[in-house]
Image 1 (cartoon, one colour):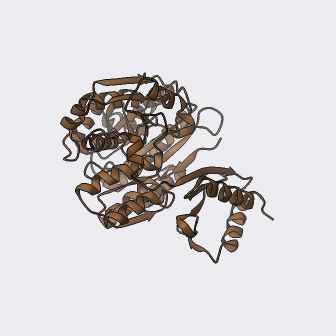
Image 2: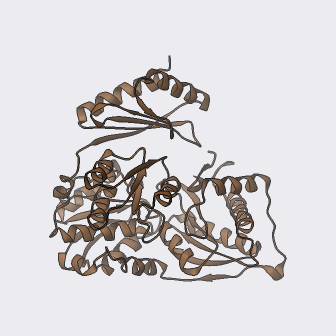
Image 3: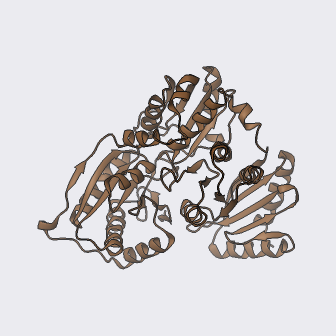
Length: 461
């Protein structure tokens, strides 16, 4: 399989001629350092290096350290970590950038590199293009032995990340401790298994049941935190009479919650509920993506806050948040961005804010909390095609078919219908795939819309 490249980094499957291999790691990390040197023009450079719990991450980490040192760059290795923790470490250490070894929510046969700038954020679209050009042209400059960089290991960076979260005014450890939550945690046998229990302990939560919290990389189910992959924790929460369940992806930048009755709270409602809490304390702009639920827009409008939509992707959300001075943002996949901490998705700060909100409502159940919000239903699908040309032909057909409807073409095709229904069709930048998100006010209408649009996409005549 070819490598997948996006603004959030590089990822691919292990093995084969075109997969994610040591050769690719050296090439992309060398290109990253070359980009960094052109960007910042300094005499000495330092990068942060973290990894998730995948078996291959501990192996590939060595290649990264050797490459960085051979390019004259000093390395601060923080070991088993989370993607947002790497961002925090860059800011704390005043580093020039950093890399997280992870393939995010992809299966354990994958790995990848998430690359950061000196602000602890993913590379901008402009910077990523420059980086890609450097890699393609192999503009690498390895240094003589006298200029080889140093490598040091700093432990407990996840704890430093948590300590910073505890200083936030909207995170209240005392009220969480008094609520005496009982929580089940699914750490997918990656670094969430370290970070989430440690966070909960720091917040005063004493009754924590751990599932798959050994960071050995043996993912026991599909690691993407969506309902169909979380059947076991959904069963366990009511069995042990817990107040809620928490599940994250392998690099801990997405978080979802399980209700006390075992029902899925919904990845879309992670951002909605936390936005609700923040807006109760301060009114300001909110940003999400075109593929996110209308529930967030409705909440913002009801409270009187400005709401903005962007193309899908953390980089696009962060860019818009800075433009409009947003107080909160994120994506409907459970990725929340709280700029009072850092401009980047962060499951740890999301959990801390969410638990504070629940505790302030006298330990309201998640089932009752969700009833506060508009009850939209959403379908998320992806359809494979034989070629990019076929996809372009299909998208043009859809545009013509729905040209009389209200339509937005900034990120694929988003078609708006009456009663807050919409369809968002996006082409993957790296694979011959169409991603399809549909939202409606009832399951019956959702099924009808889904069936209709799938037929139109698959019958290109």
